[in-house]
Image: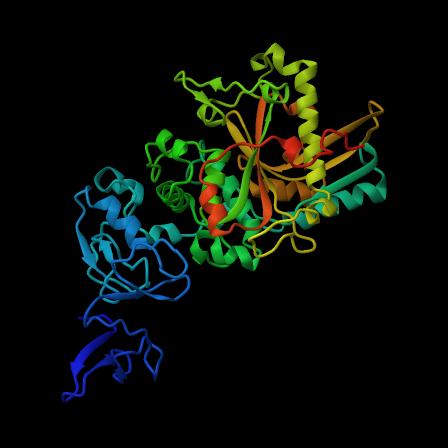
Length: 480
């Protein structure tokens, strides 16, 4: 068997493991070749495999690692393909069961030369395979054509010039930015009209992956050069999060299947995905009825109650159409709710706030100096990423005004880059004022510093949106 090692008799003195790489005969107790270091699975009594996360040797029958609890890839594969009528075969190196379409083992990375040529597209095979079978696709990075880095220095240059020349529309301009991240566009790529949620997850992860702590845990450490997985891969990881027990309500909504689908996702799916890796993610609710003390859930299109915005995700975004704004959207109470959102974001971006929180069971309790992740920003029909905020006295009205700074996946990164480089017309691409907040409900995904303990992770499987006033007690105070 082409497994990296073989067992041979040794003149009655017991069995030895011969390394297939250098042919050295190792003791049966060896897990790695003494000469070249090749992993030596002992197939004499039971097939073994090394955990790709902590390297502990486990039985190939194991579902999770005995050492770190890592969910093995073959468990995801075999449990979901057993009823799909998919032909399976063993990896020649580690014996992992893989589909007939695989060209590379999802566990050990070994090449599977006998694979069929059916691997052209997971989406194309979804009807036949269930669209959830192959694990290796979950490691595929996002295409570089939809990504653009280097925008943050350009934004800072624009602000510095405004302060230096006095050409700002604000008096006493003050601005804050989160840590740099990659802009990822949904235009001219897969999901041009439905992938905003995935793109904002990618942008958020491009920030988190700058820290070693998150490189180890996000997507089980399979990312390359800090590049987040592509949409199909994210769908696979989201399905795995559901299978692990995170957000069962969301799993039921999507029937537990999303790979290859053109379904919109929102803040709840983002949190379920991140929590499955131990990230301390929360959904923060900014909803008019809740701020007034009304805890009743709003009915969705199917008549069921909900406490998230999932029921709104498939609605077309009409926020720029004045005729779509209801009377309630423009009343004083709604304006106060929106102002609280602006105040809350400003408070979040205050560096000193991020070092005050106490935490337990985590690797670190505060962000490293100079680091602060962005905020996933969801409303009816669309989502964006908040990267910063500006405020000051508006010269035209002599009143305090503020603008959120956002990366919108609907925009092409190249267009933003061109305007920032020219220092002309860039504002309309990233600035969003209080007057643009026309919805009754908004949600923000907040990432807290640190990683969850195993116990905390188990308790976090049910996602309950939290009141923003419980996070920053002073968020009800205006920013100026």
